[in-house]
Amino acid sequence: MFQWYSNATICYAYLSDVVLPTNATDDDIKSSLANSHWVTRGWTLQELIAPPDVVFYSRDWEAFGTRSELLAALAEITLIDESYLNGRPLEDASIAQRMSWASKRTTSREEDMAYCLLGIFDVNMSLIYGERSKAFRRLQEAISRENPVDHSIYAWGEIVRSPSWVISDDDQIWGSKPMEYNPALADRELFGLLAESPADFMHSGQIVRARMANNYFDSSEGLRSPPFSVGQATKVEFPVLPQKGFAAFHLKCPPIVQIRTIIYALLLCGSWSGPDKKLFDFVLIPQVVVGAHVSRTNEIVVVSGDPDAWVSLADETGNHIYKVPKPYFPFKGGLLFRRVVCNMTRKYDRVCRDVVDGVSLNWLNPPWIEERMRMLNLISFEAGHKQDFAVFIQQTLVDYDAPCGSGKRGGVLKFGLMSIKTLYLAPLRRKRVTSKPVTPVQEGSDALANGPKGIQPFSDIDTALEYLWDHPEDVPYQHEMALPRDEWRVNVGEYVDVYVAVERVYLEDDDSDDCMTEREPDSYVDVIDLVIRVKGDPGYRDVQGSEVPEDASDL
Image (tube, rainbow, N blue to C red; front, side, top):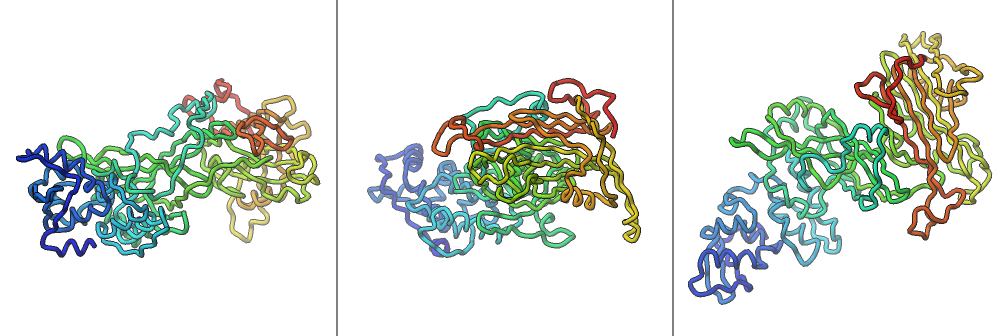
């Protein structure tokens, strides 16, 4: 259809809802056009743009102007730049700009909102009526394959200077100040990479491609991988900022405020600003880490600056898998991390990323397996040169023969810490290398009554953690949390302060709307706070608000 209109000499548009008085003024014509259904229909967008010119007729079949004569009024009403209404090639407009032209238009069928834009973006795809919202997703996938350089296809949502989800108070991040729970914010929606409709681009009409977009895509290492979609997941390469943040998520059940990590992806698009248009407002996507993938909010962040100053950031690229997260349902008897905050480098996860990214952990093994102790996760952190330490979590069953859901499967949690020093040698000599763990000291009365347990010699961190995975009883220091609430504070040498808190929160009955009714013996989730921070950081205070003691115990 778009090509058909383009090949026409002239197009006639009959607007049956436009009634003009005799000797109508320009204001009368503009007001009637603005209220016409024709300027809000999806299919009429190509009728307006594609032909060389358009003649408009009122309900009485009176011609009241052409597109070129009504150029200023049409541009103001449709939010389309005059140059594109006057024949400028559509390829000059970014994807976000062209999407914004359709942001206030509607179609009778949901699928047509995608199909009416095929000519605008010069892409082809089959028409499958009945697929509903999948049509617009297929359209975006087709556009991104044809235009991988144009990141503006991802620049949708409300434009903000700072994300509304981000926690700006460091004391709340580290746990020394509580965060107030707000039921109105419970289970706020997260999204995948792609928009759900052109309406999401309502605020993106001024976003254009950045100058360095072509250079970034055609790098010295070869072409970057184009976006790739499987089901609801999309894998894409983006430049990433080194700074990270934390966002507050208010869960409906259990009613807690959960902290999750935010990573900022830099899109090579934005808008020119400043009195002389020399500043370029780049677009950032706040990516919320959810397990092994990321999701996004309905906001995009703009940051101002000199475009050349951002070129170096394009060299730092991350592979991101975007996915719409499933609704959270608490696992009875499982774990939920309210806070996992650490300013050290995380090196190794034995099970998954979920523990660090603030997502619920379920059983590693099915509950009916006859094991009294189950390792749920093992994480290591880099504390210095050839110096690491590991944190592990165990869950002990009170009655491991009881079936799941019987009400007799109450669990007990254990946490363990261990310092590891390694020395690299040639492979033939590694068997003779011994790495000695040194015992951390607990702040309490029962600190290591029987002394540390011995462990096998290790040559590197991976070997040590693999051994600990199979022999958790050899971890030199462990603590069993006293439920329903307990805290544990450990000084790991002179460099790390570790704080662990556990709170057992009972869940609702399956048919109840109240999250704290019908408490069954196994209808609970253990909510965990894990805070790990290097000592000596300026302004660091522990969860009780006291300064970290200078005479912290050594390992």
